[in-house]
Image (cartoon, rainbow, N blue to C red):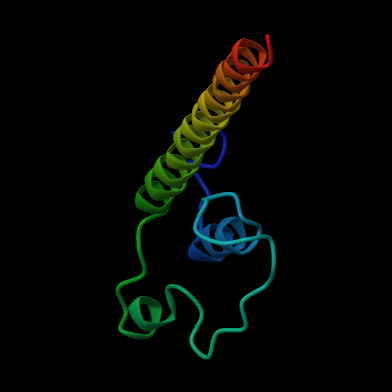
Length: 97
């Protein structure tokens, strides 16, 4: 599970979310009335650290995939824009000549 498997806590997961590491939100603290995991812990069923570590790893991997997809879309957008400008320049040249 990586370096945080033995001691992963819901507090660490919440910190990942608050810092924008999971792609759910921007880097900004979220004042919660009941922080993540509070209900489970109060009910006597705190999540196992291994489970929390798996969730953290999954969330971070999802964010990496989202960033990769976003950069691909950005490249495609710029290429499409360059192609449209090129076509317009050729059409303008053909009309003027």
